[in-house]
Image (cartoon, rainbow, N blue to C red; front, side, top):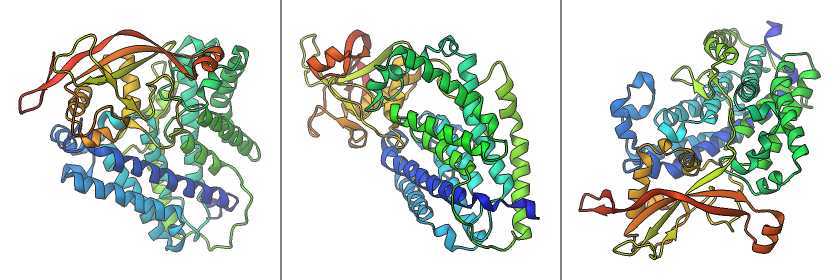
Length: 476
């Protein structure tokens, strides 16, 4: 079938596949380096406890059959190795069926990780990586030109990412309709980057233009993805520019970069496709059957888009094959941060020396300038932002964090930028306090060198210690 393939998208597929492989590598690396403190056997939300209460059909994962920290680590490092091989182009050296199986491996590996990740993995970019990763299985390699139906499904994903985010904004916070949300967003976003202070200090008229451009990108350009070339390429290129703007303005894990590689698959990049034989019949059948299944599963996400009760970042199937996306349906006007402190005093007092724990990404010491981490994802730092919004987000994991700080747990301390206590002398008490943070003005920045100014609001957790040999956490 001549219509089945699109040779003009040969280079776009190549760039997409290599970029996706790198994002897989980043995801597996983060999982391997952070899991022990988060979901390990002694983690804040242990996988063994989760799989005892959740059925396999609701969260398919290899860890239902077996779990140990060593096995989980091997699983993640295997994902790193396969992703690195794909980034290096190993799939191009294999027969078509072998390349498809190789692309299936990181998807299956990461699905097992996400489905037991609990609240640490409850973000849209996890489902997006899995949905896009599943489509990559059917894109083929050098033996065949890119299939038209898979390219169409990739545009459908990109459409839902952008259009869903645009609709949730228009239906959500009134400041998006008034074009004023960006008066606050750069200051109150979950994890600011090194340039976020400067973005926030741009003139308010520019912020209004920025918000209007966002609406154009998310509500108009997605429709143009399904128009003939070169219009589709122009629309995708503008989306890429918008995503790069977001990359510069904050840390959003690999959400922006996944969107960028998706948009690159839409463009007709320069490059000559080598002469290849027609796609084999078995490949055409497999691709068409998979496409039919994904179109069928698209019903609920499509219905969600037009619903007045639109939800964002939700999976409608346990395999995360077709999902709904969105971001910042509401924007906080004020930034609060939970500051965690410890003391070595046997009895905590107001005049005790309370030493602050420094996190890698979330604001702490007002003099510490934010750093760029994305596409790497600091999971604990992101959840701490949610906890500052409402204690309800703390669940059971925050008490686990406090317990591990009281124990000077090595794996937990590795998630932090700095612990104020030596390894052999853990704190006697730990407490948490809520502060109001705001960016300093230009004058304050020049005078103090601090990018943040913070004001105490209230206690979040009273001084807490461990009691007895069981290490039970009790307030003072």
